[in-house]
Length: 73
Image (cartoon, rainbow, N blue to C red; front, side):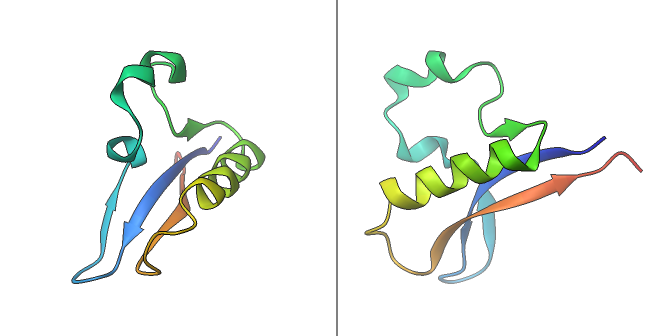
């Protein structure tokens, strides 16, 4: 079974990946659960990624949101 993460990818100077938590007001994190941006299905992760793309659409093109799959090999 796979686990999917929605991460922020920044390629401005070098490629970095991180959770998009720094871009959202910290006072609301308790509503996102213990492991925000971690999903059991690709469909869930895709919906969140699309939502983040809409919310942060005015960001530089070097910053995008991606879905990363973690597999249990």
